[in-house]
Image (cartoon, rainbow over all chains, first blue to last red; front, side, top):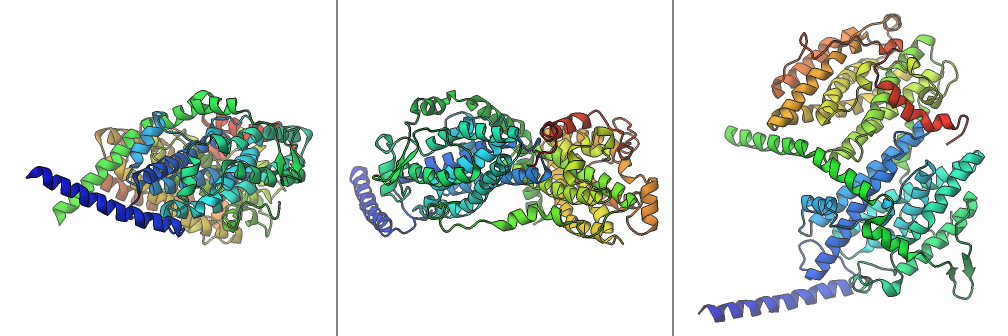
Length: 328
Length: 283
């Protein structure tokens, strides 16, 4: 008796899946949004969990290189702006973890993956911030690159992700202008300040170009993500767009972009540039960047040092609930 | 910025946040503070500045992400108060908020000792926040009625914010005192080690006595009863005892006279290092 019953249940499930898949495909074809309760293919769910949690981790780890200068910001106005910025990043991390949670993964699990080194975050945050000018370069270049990557994500097919990105992009564009303004102020300052600004641009330019990921012909996940309307433009397209944005801004700033081969190619209607040092990219990705170990150590310590506080909050909530139940 | 290559698309810049952050610049734009008012504003501004500097250290190190946000928010509010107050203090002798924050030495800082104490563990930070915010709520509530229009305006804005800070501190005091055995042990110890710094907050000096006579500021001593009454309510609910008379140690806080504990020097050295390396530079 049991064998045929099982068979028929399986075939009904399969039939339902086919219908659900057809509905999903139709939503994607119409460029509509997929919402948490909609059926979605496992691979789509996994891709989103991976991407959104990596994005959340990047926001959280990305707080560190900038928090390095909160205590030493050279004016109270800059201190306030920097503090607000780092706080925004914590907020972005929180929205993104929430968006990932709608796909059925818990925040604690994502945090464990991060502190155990099992999850990725943007490699750019494994570079260090030795000078104040790095606050300008991060805002201008890193947030600038992030915006180029993220604005198209506001239209990502998964609803909670797209909506989180709208809010995040508004704040990121504000951050980028603040970074630009820091560099502008330095470039109009003393010789020492100008040197500081140029040095920071020299150090952050190439890593910021690497933020768009490997060249299109070496990017394994891109095609499927584009078919699912998660990704809208290729890595190389976005990189070109970013450089196109930087060139005129660098002129306004008076900084030199550290690529002697950077020229506009009229024929291709694109910038020619030197080859990116992908060996460096892969080294940092593999955990051998300047600050990989330090970034994870700090996150792990904060998490472990705070365990007793989280336990206290949970225990207090449990006692309060028990008290309320007794009273009722 | 570039026109047709603008990657921001239809996303607009949120200017409101910056306007909010820079509100300090507008405060005190009207008239110059008298010597007494400047001295008073300096003390209160230093309290907020030093505490903001301390709380900023929690960002990226808090027990949960929500606390990175909350403590960062509180630090940012306090920094805003500090900027308004220092700016106003500086109108007396033509110094800017940054001149006062970055180019005064330790003996010229006038904050009370409570504010310069190290963060310690989360319970110590919460105990310090409970004392600081309960005191500031009472202070700003009275200062809103100041005959000095600038102090009244600064207090009116700050009042709403420190009210939230107090709520945050109370909630965590209850959670830690009523949570696990470990959190309770840590909270009790933090309260004992924080209490010696309470007294200084309510001490009247010659400047405040003169200002209180003119209705410019409340006498610190007059705020003590209200402070105690709030603390007693919180402690009753948290089953904690006010450790008066049996504190962990005795201190004689003299921050308003420019005498400080060993903790302020390193805090200032770190805060001021970059600005002092480039005197006269603009940032």
